[in-house]
Length: 304
Image (cartoon, rainbow, N blue to C red):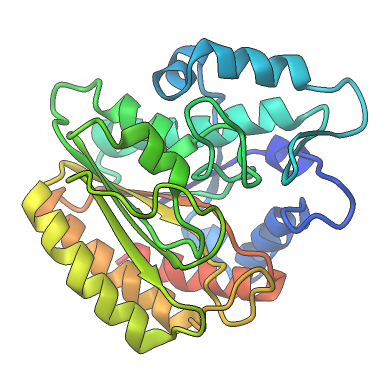
């Protein structure tokens, strides 16, 4: 397994008191170092995504807007939740570049698993809108890069963040080559695209207070048959850990064992359908301790 990150991702600045703060990544990387995981799986520096990569998922108008809004100093709001500082545009291109590098890694080498330890997150960014802490939709950018390859005909995006992956749905809903499965607390932010009948979109809403039993039974009910029917050549994971019971931004009651379980399930599906090839991308998770322990559990299962 290979882990991609980049120092610039820790320099993406947000408003004071914002939950998507640089410490999310710095404390996570420190924890991975302290536990020895980075000895087993050394960190690799991500490249920047090219504008051609970004433009597969976003129109030129969105890229131009983000460039125009990028401040020389201080922070500016792209929407009420999403902020940019002087290094944010670069951080977002490195986050997307990590996913693109992961795609190339699993398709061009013997490496089967990649984790992208990056920020800002991406799964809320719609084709022409930054939102929900997200500037570019990194996982959609990676999926569309993979589909440029002749050996990749279908991909699956599996999203267990506590918030619905509206951006991934909006970008991919009309592309039958891409299956998007998203589990999420409902009703809750972002209140978009959660009630749809696109055949390649599988929404798995969970009421507030749901715990292990409800989460696991819903994932087994919805995701396993959808992935089996889609027969993907590659699986990408929007790995959000804000469904943890300690997370301050939501009200699901998952724990580290649930993230191990869902990762084990994804690995089993990948071994059946994609020769084990998986790219996992950090999305949400806002309690620093819970995030560190949940990602550790995810990585240990991902490496199997």
